[in-house]
Amino acid sequence: MNNEQEPALINDDLYFHQIPSRVVRDTKIRLNVNPEPDDLEVRMGAFREMFEPHTRQAVILAYRKGYAIEFAGFDKLDPDCQVLSGFFSLNNSAVSNLSSAGFYVKTDRDLAHQAGKEPGWYTYLYFYPRYKNERYLIKLWGEMSSLLPDARRPPPAAVSIAEKYNVQNLFAPERKNTKKERLLRKLELLELSDSAREEIEQEIKSNAV
Image (cartoon, rainbow, N blue to C red; front, side, top):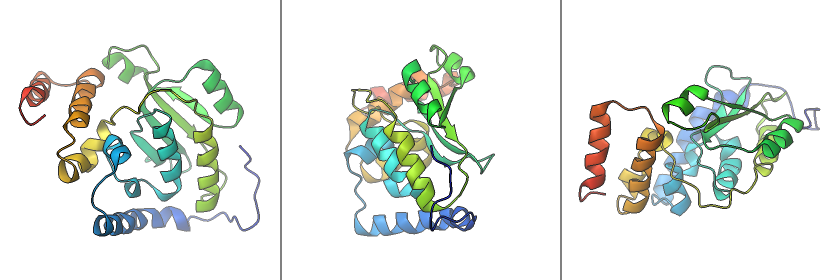
């Protein structure tokens, strides 16, 4: 990752503060123009316009490589940090290649333990860009996503981000296979109360899914 300043790239926070209004504006335009999610967006659990602008191309590429993304963008607790995360794992070679380029990888062992998986099941990719300029961030996100190895599988349905935006239920309720897959992944991956688990199991058994 080349963090040296390039022509026309300035170090300011203007873009960072514009992101919420940009996402709202872009999403409204999308809903007015075409409120039907495509197949990839159904699996993503969100319209692409709902992601922070500088992450959109990278998130789509990650999905096409077989990774379900649960979060992408400025870290909520540390706005100097950029994060891409989800329920997936990376092999040692991929971790080494990413780290050599300045993109770091960590796993959430607590989530992995809760899910009954080996540590590394939930993965965070993160980096600290020198600038918050949109063009500069798009470039770095593109570099990071290009280093993800092809998982050679269809992208799994996202879980938590789908709960947040509810795109499938609102705009594509007929896509029942993806909804069922998402519910099964919730049972597999998340720590749930007995009542929540029973509710999901009933929904899967019902005619609605």
